[in-house]
Length: 353
Image (tube, rainbow, N blue to C red; front, side, top):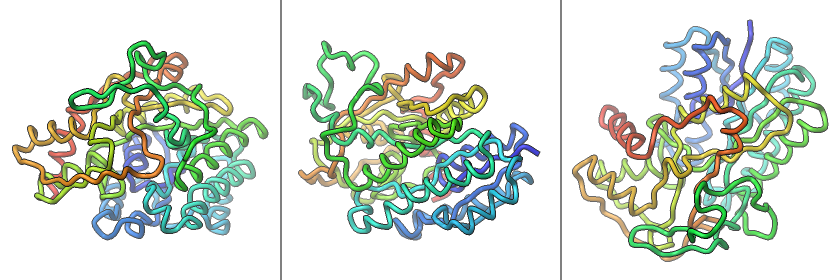
């Protein structure tokens, strides 16, 4: 039976991928050891998702293993070898702040873990499609060099700039910028995925995500912007805005829209591809704008404080240009915008908080 390995299978993108791939006739091997609890505390644990997936999909098989373990990954791949047709690698350490406190652990998870999976793919299932969930943080803080104009509720790019109409494309350099330690580990993994594709002719793709989000997100202060913001408003917690006057812009892509893009690549794969993927001009907002939308949805007023210092390597303006992917996969379309994303997050939290 055709088999898919999904790492980070209890997380936002991983579990969304399970929901989608399970209906496409795959046996799914989900790898997730709930490191999110270790990163961000009990509140951020994704273990609740395991019961849901196991009960809903008989084809889902869970492995609470560590992607850094050569022994465990060797066993997983060796026992399934040529049945493996797809690897979606969505596991990782996702936080700038956490990486600063444990840089070695961050690097071994994001870079070494990815290397381990690539090597297992090369050894046991070289014809499989390998998809990596990368990040726009591979560009470091280079986007902050763009000519921005301060508006009432956001920073915006000058209209004469080539990136204004569609956003930032893959031509942006990765060099001469501050990446943050998290950004470095993700960049190392991103480059490994590309080079394994080119060197060993493996069908690989890096999807450099903007703000990937949705109701399956277990938001925490250090990761999960819209989800955590909604938690704070609904539970009357204090939310901290970090720098840029709260006018920093994020493009927001629903995890369901992203997973549909990943599956489109699986159906028509190529070697060593790289795509910027985010909400683009279709779905983006500043923090201030997200607060306004969330307050309207909930009817609550947010308690917040402002800290002048932004996170290291953070972007003041990011809008992804996903047109390269759209040219190659014209059947893929955006479906869910920021307003609907927030409404879905709110409804899910309302049922479960």
